[in-house]
Amino acid sequence: MYIVSALIVLVSVYFAYSSNLLRQQQPPDAVTLATAKQQKQHQREAAFAPMSMTSVSEDGLPELRILTQNMFMRPPLIKNNKSDWKDARLDYFIEHILPNYDVVCLQEMFEFASSRRSRLLAAAQKLGFAYYVASERQFLWNVAIDGGLAILSRFPVVASESHVFQRGMGPDWIPKKGVLYAKIGIYADGAKPLTDPALSHVHVFTTHTQASYGEVFITQPDVKRRLAQLHEFHNFLESVLPAHRAPGEPVVLTGDFNVDSRNHELSNPDAVPYEREVEDGIATSDEGAAMMAILEGRGIDPALLGPDNTDSFKGKTLVELHDSLQERLGYHPVTFGNIVVDAQGAVHPRETVLTTRMDNMVMHSIDYVLWHNPDAAKAAEIVASLADVGVTPNFTPGSSFTQISDHYGVSALVRFARPKSADLA
Image 1: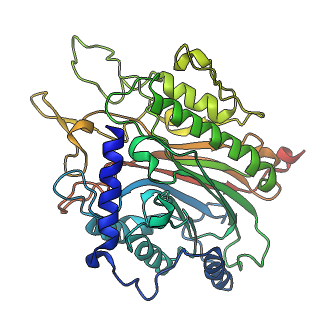
Image 2 (image 1 turned 90 degrees about the vertical axis):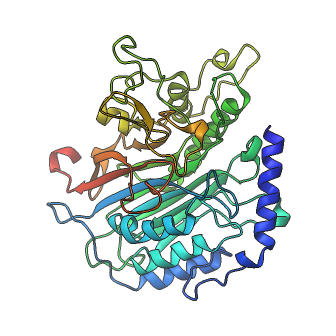
């Protein structure tokens, strides 16, 4: 099944790439991602413009509004149902959603055989997102497509890195999935970025890991591949953070981790015969617990993945992480395949335009904002805190599609304050 699916995707992408309909001219002001040199030139031009903060705290310091969103913008000719409404959804996103944030982390924003990512970057630049990092462009001769990742920022990206995972399985063998990292400078209002000193930095990561298709068991091969990729993510953290992070600077891990943290056990099946988001989302699945253990470097019991598994995915150092959604809400919220219950108690899928029938009503919690800042009190200039976090469905009233993607987004607010003298003693 995996091989057939992969072949179908490759053939579809090949014909999309070859089709005259898809050889669209890039917008004249589009940002090209062909070389790192061009990206740096774009950032240098932005460095000469004074910053204007979009949101400030009571102390007059910047507030960082972050969104992570799987955009479901796959290459042309690939769709689930009648239409994926790619262009219309992108237009809606640019007009109604993008302006509300300062840092936007995207997954499945594929560049391959399409000008959509360039169009998004050009529009984002006009909206004040002068900085970005994105997955490296791929071509047919690479026998792969790009990883579909991007980080857009109003605040200066002063350093960036990336890591490509080991190839995925089935259809996930085709995209070069991985992790993007952006070191984002926080400056005083009116400061000139990259020339004036930064007050602090926020270290933002976004990822998209191996997916599973159909019912998921923790012993199946694609789960082990996903957990192995998360181990690579931990190793990437071990490399990046010591090189770029100063004490007290916050770290935010975002993305579609494809790990469902809900265990899907009904708490009261006799009274309520369907899964409820809150009451039945409190317990954590085995894979959800394994994800956190691997990302933190604690590793897992190899037997969890079956008697023949010998990998513990243990790291060299520990990285304290917080599942901010679960800690804030007290349960694992649904971000994919949600339901609605009508007045008669009948259960229906919340979204059917974009989501496959197989994924309708699966009620997965797979999109995350993870937080790391154990030494916040040691910040030199300003102290960062995660002031708010929540699921952002991004519904699209009045459109031919009901939400911006088959996934919900997750938003967060990072707030800064001047440290108290006692905290620095």
